[in-house]
Image (cartoon, rainbow, N blue to C red):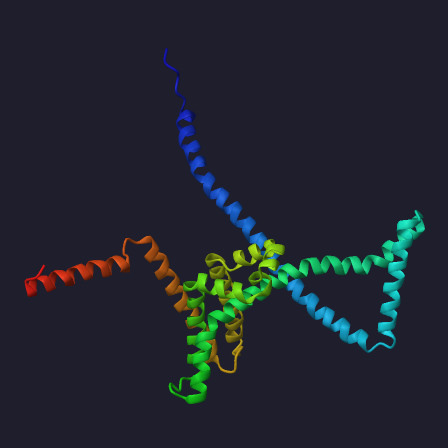
Length: 293
């Protein structure tokens, strides 16, 4: 006995097939959203750290002018210390509450320092990485300023420095990471490296090739938003609009370079294989001309 086939049954299989194929795309969108949220959180943490540094500097400058501030600070620490000792020895509710209230600023500073240390170290590590990437083109610029052997315009040098710097940061990722690793004290010293293994892992992760590309894209993205907005307002972020144009052209060059390297990885063309075949062809021609094998 054959099963009766209804029109809706013909729809079920293609529908299930379509849903099956869309599942990876849905997962990718969800995963992208998750990574985007994480990126925003990381950026906000970095902004918060920078704000806290400047806010701390402001408080230091403000309270340093207040009379007897340092004496009051010493008295505060002594009182907090004495109350903490009494709280451990005497089980009294009012004393415990007073200790918690008095020690709250210290607890807050402790938490902030725990957040500040890893974020600041990653910022320093990343900044040092880019300094090492840009140091060679910048040295060429300083030599040209001093000896005028090329006499290029400032906007041309900005284009050369920014373009060469980001390309070096990507091509020589492992070498620059190694140099940065050796310069920073907590990664270069074996004792500190063992003690701060999580921070070392964090620094190695932050300067991976894919993350460096993401940082470069983010910096260009921010720079283009600012320069384009000011250009539409008939203004310029730098002293001349030509420098803004140099940044734009640098980004276009970086995009072309990035696409070139990506396509080179995907294609079957390999320069090393080309050289090998070319060498074999040259050797064959030499053998044909000289009659030697």
